Length: 145
Image (tube, rainbow, N blue to C red; front, top):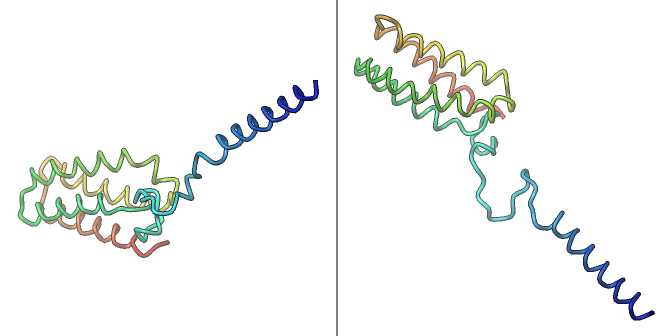
C-alpha cells in the first residue's frame, strides 16, 4: 500500500509540474518576447518614434502620392491614395488605441487628401497642399513617444 501511495504521489507531482510548465513556461508574454526574437514594428512604438507605432508604410505611400501630384498625374495619385486609405483603415484597430488623438490628426489629414484627389475636378494646387499637410502630420508624429 505504501508503494502505491508513493507512486501516486510521484505521478501527482509530475502531472502538476507538466501542467504548470504548460501554463507558464511554454509561452512568452506579448510584451516580453524572447531575447533575439524580432519584434513587429507595429507592436513596438519606441522603435519608430511614434506613439502610434511604425508609420513608415503609410508615410511611404503618402510620399508616392505626393510625387505623382508633383508630376500633375492626378489620376495615378488618386489610384495610389486608395492604397493608403485601405491600409490605414485595416490598421485602425491596432494603432488607434495607442494614441487616439494622434490617430485622429492623421486620419483627418488623410481624409483631406482623399477629398482633394477625389474632387469632381481635382486641382493640383489643392492636392499638393493636402499632401504636403499629410506628410507634415506624419513627420510630426515621429518625435512623439
